[in-house]
Length: 222
Image 1 (cartoon, one colour):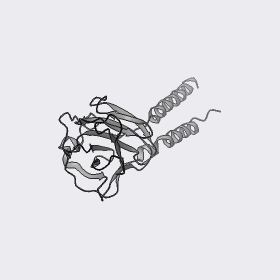
Image 2 (cartoon, rainbow, N blue to C red; image 1 turned 90 degrees about the vertical axis):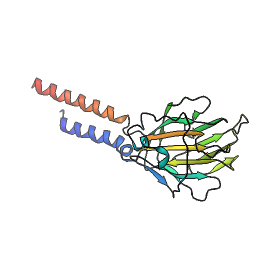
Image 3 (cartoon, rainbow, N blue to C red; image 1 turned 30 degrees about the vertical axis):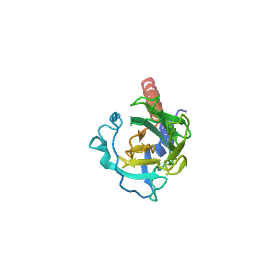
Image 4 (cartoon, rainbow, N blue to C red; image 1 turned 45 degrees about the horizontal axis):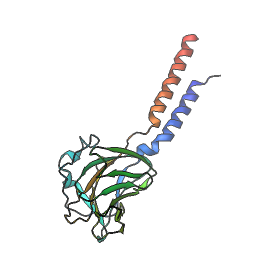
């Protein structure tokens, strides 16, 4: 016998179980913070995912943390649970070839091949973001990288990342200084946002709609 209340309850439970961890996750700074002066590249452009947030009101004032090879106070960006991440190229000003790399996905942006406003979506299991900036130092091959946790490899004397304050628990911006000598943190600027709702939600809504239709159909036939 068709037990609509029981099936409806099961559908709701299964759907919410699939997306509630993502919905509840937040973006956080892991570690201490320090004030860092930054500049914006002339081609900096706020992507629509950031418009309407406090980033519209002078983003450099919100930069509060940095990581670098000779910095004793390190901070990193993390999430408190699994989520989708939306990466956006917001600006660049480097002469050298600089790249942004999400290690489980691969290269997401290059200042030589990507366009301001490009968007890449990745899956993340939670914790400190596994994210690097790299530079070729003008030599045509990867010379050094620095990760979100402040650890540099290869050429590393002057590589720095500055991380903005977090807006609405789900938006932040990475600023990369590739060591060219200008110290402006504007060589590659990448925004990252937690996708607020996962793909399971539309599926849940479709399922509930179908169950509602079946229930209405049964009532009309009885």
